Image (tube, rainbow, N blue to C red):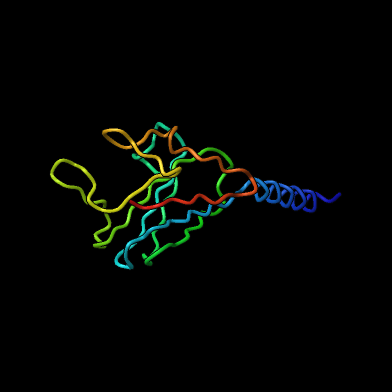
Length: 139
């Protein structure tokens, strides 16, 4: 086979393998109280960076009720999701003087922490190669 054809075949094969291992994660955020501001989503791939450095983030205009955000082309594995309703549109999670969030927020598995946020293990959802949907209710 001609070297250029061999390289083209190899490149196509590698692209097909890469595409086969990429998964989409649909995050469905429910119980949104108003259409003001934005819904912010942060995706974490391990306990070491949980609530510090997301591997992916997304923003969508808020809608009363529910919205879906699709995070595309993720490697299969375990992820934690943090969501908040940035109702005032300032781009950050607002908190009171004690550091307690004052905007609606939630985590995957609808996990709740005790005296702070939940752990990565509590929020971890498995994303298979076929993709998945995670439903999260704001509170």
